[in-house]
Length: 188
Image (cartoon, rainbow, N blue to C red; front, top):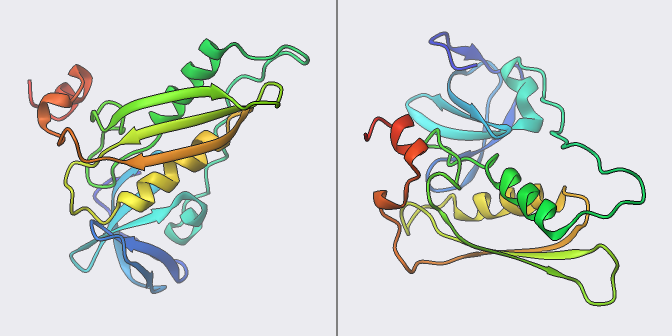
């Protein structure tokens, strides 16, 4: 849903200003141009300014809110292997998008480390630690991206604790883009 036709906001809606992250209320009746609808959120331009609207508020854009993405359920009584869980964790992080760039955070090279450890004394319960960066240190969207990663990882069965840490070393650069991202962004 990011054709050239603007949409009229159906109701007042909370949005965050890109790239500073400040929360504002966009008013019903305002014209919005949807520029990106990836990872369950929408990037829109209203009056020349860019905003991110959560997927739960898609109805304000006249779009039906997407159902929560669910992976295949494991067979009853069969715990996931650490390898299966790790694949699910990386797959979920691939559903998180920078609101200004139509590439997921994994292919952007923003995720530097991901550790999965069992929680002591809890059966089939894991803690996930993620170290990630942003394309620019001053980007105000950092807390929003951190929360997006944390929420999506906590939605995975067996993941009961998540810590997403923003780090600045090494500083991100275009060389960290995956081949797929480079192709998608026309850098190859």
